[in-house]
Amino acid sequence: MPHAQMHPDTPVQTPDRLLRLLLVGAGGRGSTYAGYAVTTGRAEVVAVAEPDPIRAATALERHADAELFADWRALAERAPEADAVIIATQDVDHVEPAIRFAELGYHILLEKPMATSEEDCRAIVAAAQRTGVMLAVCHVLRYTPYTQGVKEIIASGRLGDIVSVEHLEPVGWWHQAHSYVRGNWRREDQASPMLLAKSSHDLDWISYVVGKPVRKVSSFGGLMHFRPENRPQGAADKCLDCSVESTCPYSAKRLYLSCLGDPDRERWPLGAVTEVRTVEGVEKALREGPYGQCVYACDNDVVDHQVVNLEYEGGATASFTMTAFTPFTHRKTRIFGTRGALDGDGVRVTVTDFVADLVPGDEETIVLGVDGPDAGSGHGGGDERLVDSFLDALTSGDPTRILSDPATSLESHIVAWAAERSRHTGTVQTLAG
Image 1 (cartoon, one colour):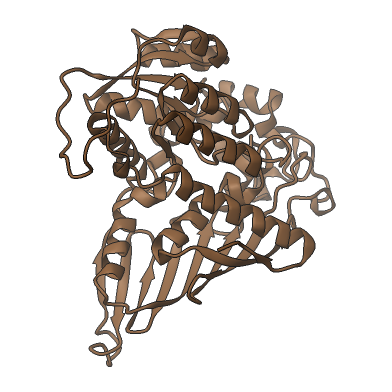
Image 2 (image 1 turned 45 degrees about the vertical axis):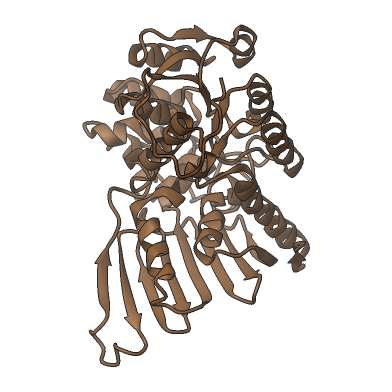
């Protein structure tokens, strides 16, 4: 239950007991957060709510002493003694448990997006404010060593005032096919628009770097490639039966069979397809499930490319591009200031000083990042630092340990919906100051 609030300058003390966590949704993200929290030696999972029997069994293997519930409502009804709950259900299923567990007094770690409508997001924020619980939204990119290094460079004044930002999210051709054509986030009515499902990270990240609120938004994009009319001649509905599979960039057979033998790739993306780590198991899943479907014969409707233009309070601007048709790699960002420029690739940045670096080659390159860019490799250290910050907040009772608080996270969601309104109506959206 909630801890008493402490002064923000109070150092984090080692608790005299393990922090007790509930896990609602034991899929990839929930398992990652809960698993890392346990490995810190600071927390334990005392209850799990997961309707899928395979995921439930896996969760119990990892958290042997946890009580298992098939539904979050049964867990809420029981309301075991605990400090916080991790909510990592599907996007459309965030709002009800978030509000209910806030009402029960649990602090909350909530997977992004907060919810799939502005009304539901505002309801979650209101519930956290009304009950006084701490709510951290999983905008993990804020927490990476790379991001913190970029923020330190900006704060040092080396770039002067930020004038414009150019930011690219290279989703990756096979990742788009896995998650947003065949996978759980392929349809807006079953999940959310791409900007929320995938790129709320990026809209939040740009605002975090610029440090000012967005005032105007415009956007263009759509579903260009993954459509029935682009289906190659002779293609079958299933990749395993397809005569052109070997030459298709989106072959499910090539993607998922190549994961076998690689522990990281077996965990993700293969873990979303099957828990059976054999050729026969993978092929059975591809034949019977959605991940073996031809990408030109799915019921997907989310965009595969989109640009968003942003104007911030004070006049700074940013352009954001999300595209499926890239290598699977880190985000790339250029920041242009009045005294210098920064060019970053998610691991290292090159800083040009307009006073000192008159000769090409004088720029300074600094390595800031670690690990890989994706969920399977911890989002460049962001997953771990997010959980560390949340545990720090629980231990100290200090919500300022959380970089992605409810009001801040709501802002990036509002920007995403404004961008979608712009994309659908061809208008520039103005946000209230």
